[in-house]
Length: 218
Ligand SMILES: [Zn+2]
Image: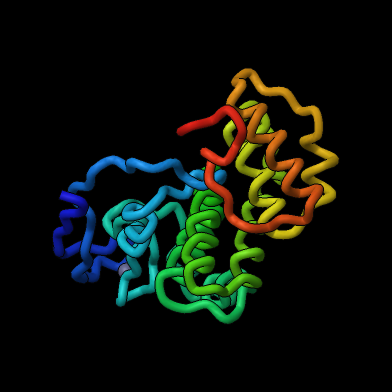
């Protein structure tokens, strides 16, 4: 039972249009270790296409279209929204994911916005659109930097940012901000140390969490 999906109608919370989308109803838990940014291993790695939907009526994007939107409908026809926040050359699910991130950002849900840009980066990684993936990671880092009150007390985000910086080529900041950084959890301290070593070597590839010395799974 690796994946069970269901196709059903969703009524858009913004415009009221009804459209059909496929959602995941059941999956097995992942067996293998995730990447350092917690992207799950296969088969869950490939399920992201079910994580966002777009309304054909108004262009609203969210995980489920019946979820309320904390935005004015006008925003959906704004230049910012229609140009994916300035990230060009994207289409399909990555574009929908970026739009969802923009809606979260507009609605001041900074945690969900940051996480959604990370999801968009994963989708773009799969399409080998490295420049756009890096732009999404940088957008996520920008949200983190601009909203310190939301994030600074959560070490999970701090560790995630190290990976986003390294994967987008910001090696010197990883070394500067994370060298010698200690966290309440030994696992996090080990990951930060590992990220610094990778950044010092100029390595911007994806790495699995179980590559970190002393960690077998997260
Ligand atoms: Zn709609």
